[in-house]
Structures are given as C-alpha cells and as structure tokens.
Length: 497
Image (cartoon, rainbow, N blue to C red; front, side, top):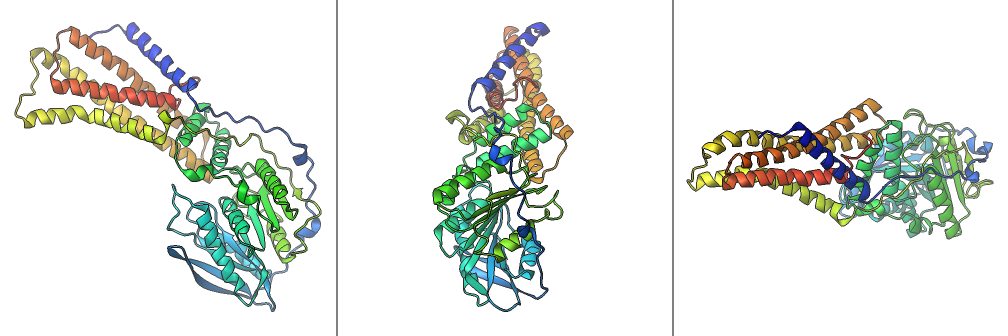
C-alpha cells in the first residue's frame, strides 16, 4: 500500500485546485459595491431646535394589564394612561424580530405616558410566528387590534392613535397603516425598508468587516443564505409603504450596524412620493444604535424629546419645515440582494447530500451486520486480513473528520450570526473558527486522496474485498466525495485563505 508522497501530493493539489475552481465559477456571487455618495445626505441640516425642547413629565400614570383577543390566541400587554384631564394621543409599540416582550419598551412607554401619551406595549404572539415562518400581515392585524382597543378608551383621542415599530416592526407597521384609516400616525425606528434578506446580508457584511473576517467567511454565509427557503426573507416592503397616507416620523441612528440607513431612507422617501404623502419627518440621531441608544446604554440625545414633541404636537407637527435633518449618516456599502441559490445548491439538495453521505457512512457496518444475521462468515481471507485493517482505520478517520467538518461549519455560522445580532465578538475568534473549518476541509480532501490510493494499492497486492467491504469502501469514499463537492460550493477550498 505504498505510494510515493510526491505522487499523492500532486494528486491532492490537483483535486484542491479543481474544488477551488468550483467555488469560484458556480453562482451566486455576492460582492456588495461601495455606496455612491449622494449629495442629499452630505448636506443635511441640523435638527430644528423646537423638536428638541425639554418635555414636561407628570408623575400621575395609571397602569393596567390588558388582554385582547387575536387570531388563534390572546395578546397580553400593559396599558399606561396619564391621569391629566382630557383626551390624549395614544400609541402602540410593535416589536422587532424575536420574542418581542413588552418589557423592552418600558422606559419609552413610561416617558411618553408621563408626558401625556397613552401607550400599549404587548407581548408578540407565539402562534404563527417562528424562526422560519413570519407573516407580517398577521402581526399587522395584531397591532390593529390594539389600535381599536385604544380608540374605545375615554381618555384617548381616537383621531390621534398611532403605531410605533422598530426593525422588523418597520415591515409590520406600514401594512397596518395602509390597511386601516384608524391608524392616525406612524413612527418608524431603524426601519429597513429593503427586503429582510438584503438587510441581513448588509448587517452581516458590516459585522464581518468590523471583525476583519476573511472574504471566504462572508461567501460561506451568503451562499448559505441564498439556499434558505424562508419566503419572508424576500418580502418587498415598498407596496405597503407606498400606500401610507398618515403622518410618518422615522428615526435612524448613525452608528446602527444592522440597517442600511441611507438606502432605507431613500426607499422611504420614494414610497412617500408614490403615495403622494408629504407628511413625513426623517431624523438621523448622532451615535444612535439600532435601538436609538448609545452603545446599548442611554437613549441618544434628543430621541425621546423629538418623539414626544412630534406626537403631542400632531397634527401641527405632521409636515416639517425640513424632511431630513440631524447628524450626517455614512453608509459604506450597498445593501446588495443575495441571489437565490441554483437548484443544485438549495436547501433541499444540501439536505439530500448530507443524508446520502450519512447513508454511505453507515452502509458498511449495516452490511456487516446483515452478513452476520445470515450466518455467513465475515472473516477475511488471509490476504485481506493483512491489507484490510489499515484501510478500515482510514475510513473510520474519514467519517469522524467529515462529522467534525459539518459540526464546525454549523457552529461557525451560528457564532457569526450571534456576533452580528449582539454586536459582539473579536476578530481572533472569527479567524480561529475559519481556520478550523478550512483545515478540516483540507484534511478531508487529503484523507480521500490517500484512502483511494490505499485501496488501489491493496487491490494490486491481491486483496479481494468481500461484498460488505465493497459497500463500506464505496459508501465512505462516495459520501466524502459528495461532502467535498458541497464544501467546494461553499468556498471552503477557495483561495486566498
């Protein structure tokens, strides 16, 4: 079973080049270009001083837990009503992605209620919303039920009941506003206004740049995203946004790493033009992050004041002297769309590839068990007894390496996504994870080449494999070959490293 190391090295190198080529030539490609400078965003005026006037807050607020019937479940929330006399404007908080607990809005709800705005913060539904399936229309109906509830309260001015949505809520709130004239106004915070897939790809790209991740790590993520079959990821926000007639207040933070805020603003302005709606106000908040906070701490200066003064001043504040104002936003790259994966690289084919590889890996042991159950001897002939054990050990190592590669790729993607969501992580951790993934991929390639050479050499030396040994060899080599092609598509063999 001796083969020249030079021959094996050349063979492994040729296979590596071939697999690297697969990663380069097969679509889809994702390389977001720099965003061209727009003069409209380079000369934004300062925010008008009257919008930033201090808010007089009162301490008298009544709080009550509420329950509202919705589709397939009840929605629970907290109602806050200022005890000052008269009818007040009111607003419903609509959460972003995730569990959406009402408690995340407590500081804002308390501030607004003490300033004379009735608020409802409610827990997001648990039926009909999950990681894979998200019906923004269903979430919009939930928000409208809260609006209708507020309109029945004697303390509320029914003509000034609005919706506030953050992040994913920026796709939900326009649907509700376009659907019902009961919505009197709309507040958008970090609203993407592009498809969820474009927003996520942009955010991941920004985070990977911050972490100085290799280009290949971005390609791995985006190709994986292109093969995901979640319909909501390609949701088009423009049709609903273009039907909004109500006054709109939009906030964007200039340090938000999750939203392409310049393109999101352009989309909002375009939609308002199509709707014939000139009652929109866009404010860029200095140092504001995705939640309008500074590094996750206190709210950015002027956010709560601007929000409160705008709501309490309606309808007079609906048409501002200047549509866009505040700090200058700087977006480096375009929010490019992630092309859908071709049929041979979709989630179904990837799952089938992994399943076939798993079948190949267990085929040999299963075949040996069947032989035993039939009462046939499985002991190899004399020549096989000498040549088979080294091959068997190679096959076992290949199975463990392949399993390690699959686990490491899933873990690496999960870590990158968590880093992006939490705006955390350090570049050494990303680089180390990437090197582990690439090293396991190359090790799998080397094991495949050397195992093939070992089998060929053993056959030349007179080994006569039994039927179950044929199954074991074909299953492991074939399964590993399938995984190598899949790894090549996802760029695990591409250069530069």
